[in-house]
View 1 (cartoon, one colour):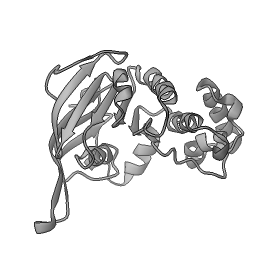
View 2 (spheres, helix red, strand yellow):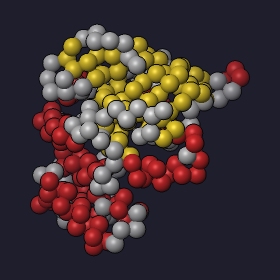
View 3 (tube, helix red, strand yellow):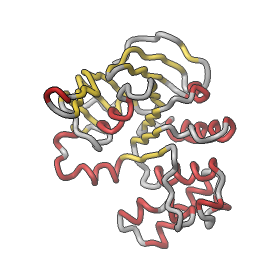
Length: 244
């Protein structure tokens, strides 16, 4: 039975690339829960399995073993509906922004609505309204090359939020930003996360933003090795329970 307190539930998740002598075990029996209403951070050295785990919980990769439940749905049962499930329920924020250079800020933010066949005028207006709420409304008609890094990331956040997804997944969202811009982005994400119907997952190496985490899960060699808890607004409490 699904637990409505959690956006993501992983149980004994395995991911193996290759076969026989060339097989690489990227995930080794991962148990991990992501609660609603929180920012859950995932940290560890490059190659430890963070990106693989992120790809598995978003359905971009299939798990080799174990079970992955996202928003009450077991991903292996979605079959041909996985892409629509992602479009409807998951927002992605990347380090490199991935904005389309020929589109304005508003058009970039509206791309998921275009994909969902929302009329262009309505989609663009909704994007403009969201950009205004994120503090960059005056830059709605600017091209990406005319925006600062922090402004581009806010446009990327708008694009991730435009469909009102229940799970937001961020891959190094502040790595390309200075401290002030990175903090502003995390304040936005914190405001988005604190909702009983939404969760935010952040993969990061940026210890400047750890204070925004409600929990930090540490990975090594495809395994979760410990979890650090915090209040999502400041000081962390070390060693507060095993990762689960």
